[in-house]
Length: 351
Picture 1 (cartoon, one colour):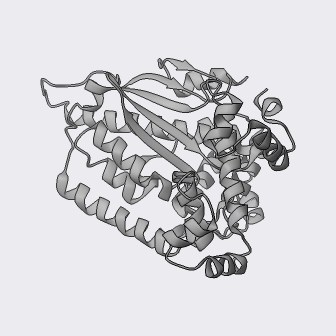
Picture 2 (cartoon, rainbow, N blue to C red; picture 1 turned 90 degrees about the vertical axis):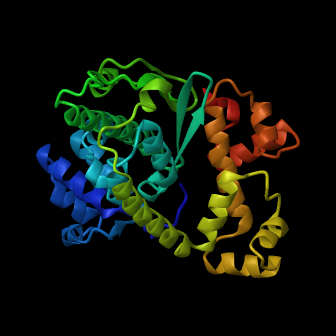
């Protein structure tokens, strides 16, 4: 995700959790955090955040120090629900798995700013679609593995909480974790696949889907949680809303346009359309973006590049279909633009 390096994106609680994780692994956590420019005393302030660039640096250095390509799976599986702050407390108060997933879709981007999660209702199941826009090739596997393992770990934790609440002889006791039909990954099966089997035990997994998806059983995620607490949920969610509002208030103009384009890439066909939507003149918008060191076309190209890469990961879409979806009149124009963005043709990138 091409956010400014100073974008306050990731809560300090994740940095603190990763620090303890590295220490337990016997790695040089202090050196890694000094290299990333993170003062450990900041761990004491729950409202602190580390920049996206610092998050990238920590992740890269952790991978190098561990020499473990599956580090993202190991770390993601050890992130506890309280590390998500208010969101974690809200999840632990939900009425059922459906509500928990809806909350996660609504607020998880506060925790991982490059993340987009969507819950889609199908005829006989729900599909959780996970997209990560972090534009850092060295962390492609790592970031998605952290997120997928974190989501799975969170669902499993809620299940275990539910079971513990029911141990008093409740006849509706749930004996095993049966929420998931299948876990699908957008990339080919990696060499460290055995670690996937350890991280997602007894789960059906498949690879090369073009998207990361978790298929959820309807009857399982609609089953009421024994720990549901509407008052606690209301309080925790109000804090999530407050944090989300603060993020939007502090959002730069470039970030606001980026997010608008990412959600509706075909709605704003040019600078004039975006200026009208933001209730400013085209000249004022261009000037404001210039002062931020950006430009409207630069943001448009960034979004199209990321959507193109996402589309190319999905083997069901032809290059022509991707080109037309992104507003290119001819696939050849898309090919030229993609080569400019990545140095490769779409067909070469897809290989």
